[in-house]
Image (cartoon, rainbow, N blue to C red):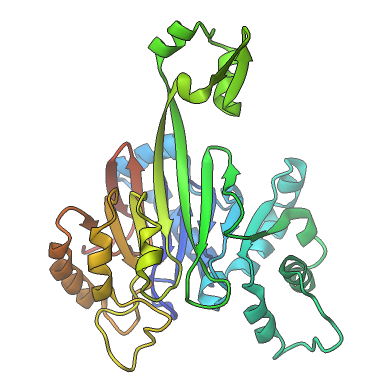
Length: 361
């Protein structure tokens, strides 16, 4: 799994550090910050010019970062710092990718949480009147909004899906995405993405007598086959390897919600404030000092990535604070991600790289 951070701060972007946006395996985007197109362009440019051989090696494994590879966008909630770049990305796709996406039947899938559109709809009522319109379906409302903003071509390249956490996991190729509501605002969600790979067990293959080739390929893809009167499942021939990434979205501190991430190896959890203060909005955001006890309990966690840190803290203050607090989590890597950071996780090994020439961590 390869993770790009396009932005990691809270509410208001600063130079070089935009608000939350995370790209995984050049395919999935979790939240899309208002400055996403600028940040992605900068990441692509720095990737091209890097002399870091470790980062260059990642290109052969995962390919180059590219706008046209992003096919799935998961929006945690409809506050502008988490979805404000959607219009710009879709405008760019209509301008430069329309023919390709239509020809290859490669739309951009946009996933929005159930019950999350109503707050967005109320905000748009400041600019439009909905007195004579009753649009109850959030998918239709967002689609109509984007059509007005971007024109009819939006229907050719974008598909909108409503995520219900009570429904089964979303399965896309070798990935599985699950969602759970948090308590930030109406409908807001956190996500887990599991990247699954299968390693062939030659001994099992020989014992079962399954031939290599088309039959084996069908088994790997579909999960089970009928062969010579027997049902053979993928697990009988292949060993499953998986990496699970967790993203909290914006959320107040909630021990039950954190427990849901117990099977993750990498967790991005919002950590807006360092310590409690009566003037802070800790009813809708997390205080870092509250997290430590619960993060310790996550059995498989390798890397904890505190993000969405308030702009009231300078980067030097963040480094100093995290250096102190990470001593309380001796078995977990604690790393505050920055825009232009790249994290690779594979088979229990985690590597952290940065494309920021001014990186001081």
